[in-house]
Image (tube, rainbow, N blue to C red; front, top):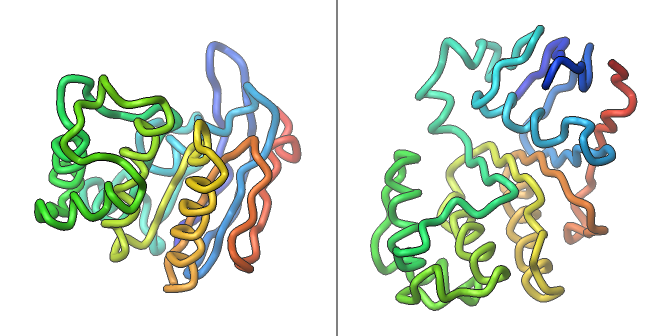
Amino acid sequence: MLEAAELRCERGGRTLFSGLAFTLGSGALLRIAGPNGRGKTSLLRILCGLLEPAAGEVRWKGAPIRELREEFARQLVYLGHAPAVKDDLTAAENLSIACRLSGFPATEKSIHAALETLGVPPQALVKKLSQGQRRRSALARLVLSESVPLWLLDEPLAALDAAAAALVTGLVAEHVRRGGMAAFTTHQEAGFAGVPVSVLDLDAFDA
């Protein structure tokens, strides 16, 4: 279980939110909502340990994540709103590196299959891909992350056409049905194949 306890976030001398608390258990899907600049990306970065909160703490299975460090990192997939890919590598090389860094190296065959599932040519240089293909090449990591319990996704549907968006929401829904958990942000309306979505509105945690 992931737990946020009385979180406060400050950026540029301004408090974005305070007193934020929630729990996310197995089989749960959470949408983090709020207008631009309200702290949605900052909250996801706090939840995965990339950003320290100004107050409060994040716990994984009851233990503060700052104490778990790499143990917690192996339990999650975090995909930011910008594809973290290197232009001069192929889509397959980028995905292979991402998997190794996460502690779950994948075979060449499985990497190619994941990319092809998302409609990305594995041997294409990333710099030659469209924005949608670049985004899908990063999202292909989800296909390889069935055993990772926690998915934190920042704008996973950005730059995707309707077919690709449906594929990604299907992957998330299946993950949750398997007992995984996910939190995401999005500016787009999205259904998750019958999986209920809870909403955390950051406007409810005024500075």
